[in-house]
Length: 285
Ligand SMILES: *Cc1c(COP(=O)(O)O)cnc(C)c1O
Image 1 (tube, helix red, strand yellow):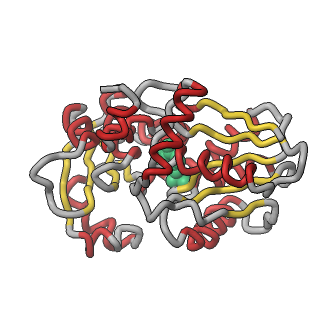
Image 2 (cartoon, protein in one colour; image 1 turned 120 degrees about the horizontal axis):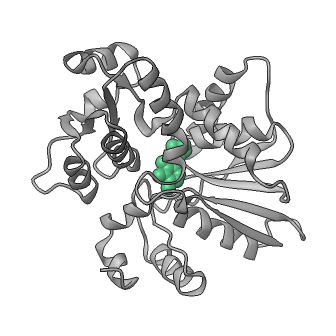
């Protein structure tokens, strides 16, 4: 058994991990098309909102964040950061937010801010998926299975596409009931190439720890132990869940002997700010 971690949390201090991979080609296109403004969607703790706000500030775009739910009295650390980076925040009703993937709703919401380059929730679009595919091809190939935590599944779709049947790909949904991602990932893949089908990937959906953004004591303890042993920070929303799952599965003999696993540390360390108790236990405050 060999487990390696690819440190994409180190690729940038603020526009970190897979969020940078997904934003990069979109920023290039937005610039080429003459846009001065980026508009996107997310929850109060969204790493994508954080990364988009930081990217806008760094690369000279105005940014608009359409945030799920009513305006909170006390902004989350993510929203505080986004606002400081110059992002204009607009809060919308949860029931309306649920429909933002529909083109009509998206157009209605974004109309007052046009012209703006629109990034979907989580930053996952066709360009983002191709960027993750290119990333997958750039990795050293000395492993059998590649693993990644999944939110929208855009990053995983890119890994599947880029590795083109040469490896096994396993995704760990962080949301409860993550099996819905099978069809979402399928559609990202068929948008890239309708005639190609992939069966070298799967999802392991039972390490959601109660749902998106939920952290249990065992998960918290795991992140602390991992930090003490490896001096590598994880956060409980994505990477902590994936590595907890991998350690657990390895211990249970899930993988064949001599399997070489490459896990992607997809970044998102800022997410720890939403977990003050864990941060304190990590002695980071
Ligand atoms: C957003 C995010 C993911 C999930 O990426 P998707 O492409 O939406 O599946 C994984 N890890 C981290 C740290 C993230 O911020």
